[in-house]
Image 1 (cartoon, helix red, strand yellow):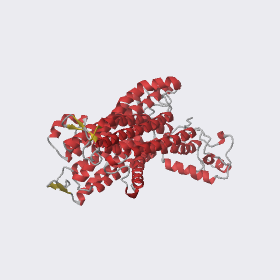
Image 2 (image 1 turned 90 degrees about the vertical axis):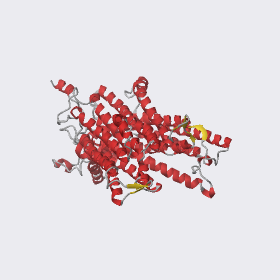
Image 3 (image 1 turned 120 degrees about the vertical axis):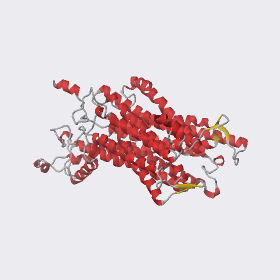
Image 4 (image 1 turned 120 degrees about the horizontal axis):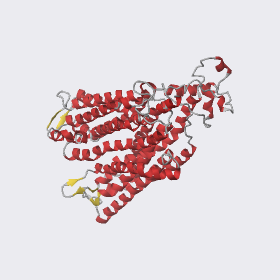
Length: 590
């Protein structure tokens, strides 16, 4: 009977929606994932549908200057990548991932609804005449209140959805363990399906037809497309992402009876502080050679709710002092956690410290990735974008090649590359997580080399036809850029998806949302590093009256040098990655 119960229930401590031990046959696994993947796809579609041309709303409707509008959009985007730290903390400490996602989705919907009202209700909607709008201070304030409610809402969703999806697979079950690795591939696939519509159809429609249907094209609302086309306005432009987000909410709650839940483990920041304080208090104590003498609870799975016990690792020995059980500690039946910590609690902090160098190497990769929305677009604007006599591709829309590469390669990677790699490596994932991320870093170097080669060819055509100061487009098809976008997408599949799996797998059980949020910060830091690089390069290369590498007239610049610089930085970053990956110690679960 006891063996039957072991097979009946999950062994990772997950529960069903009633709080009972999760039954393997009726909860979790792939049966629960369609609702989570649909939720993520719709949420990303709503987010990109809102953010793709938000700067145009700032300029056209809020009547802001280019610099002010750009800064406002950048600040808002930055907030969208910082609020996940708050959402993750709440999920890991108090609410758990399900209720954090559910609560913050409601905030997200409120923000989208308020934004729609600000574009449709008289009094909230700025008055416009003679092609110029005149918003009042309260009207502008309502827009920003709505935007930052959305930023807060996405903060509870971004770091939790991927982890919650992975929670549906029991790590102690070999077949489910393999499926968990596959889940991250398909999770990223769902993100790209959402962004595909935003980066292709939406950008073209917004550029050529108007913002109203620009946000209204998504396939989930095709039924109302004709009506949308005849009711142009920002009210629909913001309203349809709200509808899409509502679909995301419904999808998420429909799966409730099937989900497995990890219990919240209490504040991870408090546990980290306790280890540091206890280590300092016992700095004079000597760590015993027999590590089994270090303190660990024996009467239950772990002292940390919802967490497995962690085995001792040899590095960072000073922190082991927090788990030294002195005579004074033995006298107390309930010693203070600020004086005595379990080995698992100490290893939690060690796991985070081990992760940080790997995390840091992700910033340069994110810098490379950010070029798709900046210099790649500038490069594309100088190239021939016409397809036929009447259709012109917006330079930003070529990022669809990046999205398509991921959509095409996810099934190829999951169904072909992994099984082949598994035969050679013996690893059920095909590659170790660190190897997978390293492959992506190498591919990102190739992407920058490809972009640089395209720019060299473009500049040679400029020189050949003497187009240095001409306003004519360089007679070179924008589709020359397709390989660099495709290669960046390939790098994403290895590095970004590898990061999601790595941070989930190597994070302490009770800190998985926090580590997912930490991974998201590399996106923000990558953008900031890109801005810093452009600023420094511009300052250095424009000395003595020179035009510099990235002037307003790229025909007289050297954008190729900037790509070479990024390739060199990426190569150096890869070298650092090899060193920290060799030093890295994998988490030991007991």
